[in-house]
Length: 79
Image 1 (cartoon, rainbow, N blue to C red):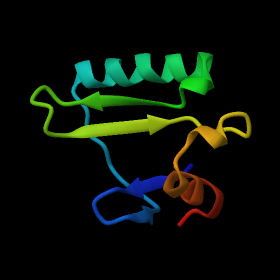
Image 2 (cartoon, helix red, strand yellow):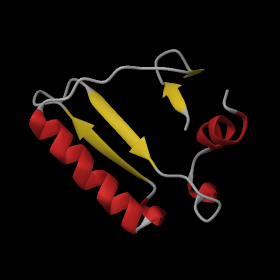
Image 3 (cartoon, rainbow, N blue to C red):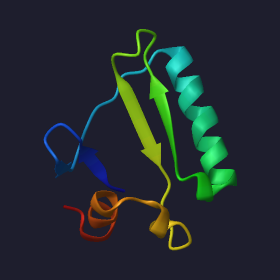
């Protein structure tokens, strides 16, 4: 597991995420899609106002080349 703070450009060790029921369902659907097809490698969940966004990604040896350089550094080095 890797957690990335895009605003601060740093790896984190712990976060808390609070979702509405609808957002949780959207996250579940996105994760199901990623589990079935890791080549898609990421999905987004946004709040109703599109002011907040959660990006989830599935990484594996088979799709690591699909990530940008910064993401690969986080995945490989956790920093």
